[in-house]
Length: 147
Image (cartoon, rainbow, N blue to C red; front, side, top):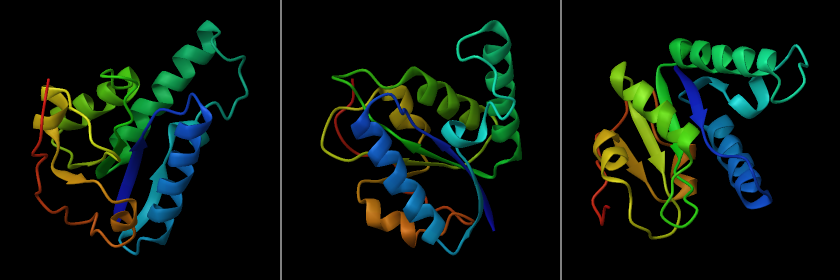
């Protein structure tokens, strides 16, 4: 069973709605044993957001979440041509640690070349996340325009 790390921005209402939809799809996926979501699974200590202690705590919890996971699912939610830097970091970290990366991108837009090259399985249909075997990730690279 897959231990999922869900990398995604959650800074505006559209991103939060998309994150909730992806979480629902992953919870319905029978190959998923657990999901670590930085939005929901960090700062259990209730530290003041953006304080130095909060920064160290959340960074450490995210890194621990990455280490415990067997697959990274990333929502590639661009603002213009700019991917979320936190999500980009998590993708790079997962790639460097030989973790399969499933990337979801809704809509058509150019993708950063380095992100495109690191993806194991590209998905552009939210419903597919309900049935995709995340314990044995299909190799389906991104094919499309890059910058």
